[in-house]
Picture 1 (cartoon, rainbow, N blue to C red):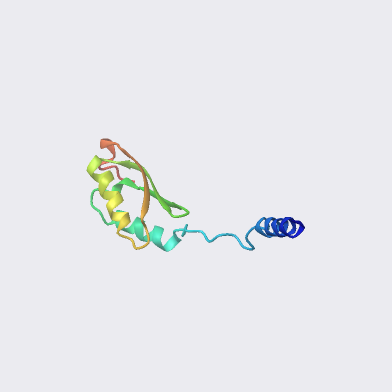
Picture 2 (cartoon, rainbow, N blue to C red):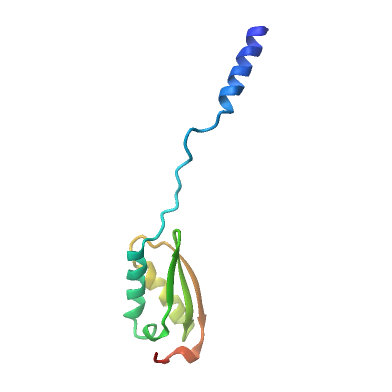
Length: 105
């Protein structure tokens, strides 16, 4: 009986020590080159170029902010940035604002 208790205590003590190193993360941050490539894709689109869409990265998420002239433009912006290799998640915070269609800066 004494051996059983000691064996159980040893098992519990070893089992509670926890992992020696943190688990690997599956988040792969988007680097600045990919952000620039996404911006370039938007700047080469005739409808979206004048909109000055803000593009940023938060870990593995590409974030789009600003105004676009149509829902189709909002949808196309997301498609264009997803063409960049390594961009899989997009937070599309673009707002449809028909007045932004041809606003020169």
